[in-house]
Length: 76
Image (cartoon, rainbow, N blue to C red; front, side, top):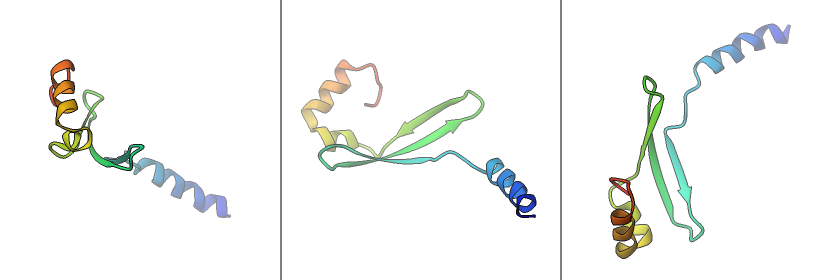
């Protein structure tokens, strides 16, 4: 009898589950970074971004400029 009620509940939960849109990342020094993730279901891609100048606050101005000039990422 319990299985009869449990099956529709499990189906309902699996249909209405969505991906996580915020990720909290912590490095070894204890600094935290909050990423916001936007998914595009038509292209099957995603875009992640943090607050403005979050990387500059974490690694410093010099390393930020090195990452920006040496990398191919538009907004490191």
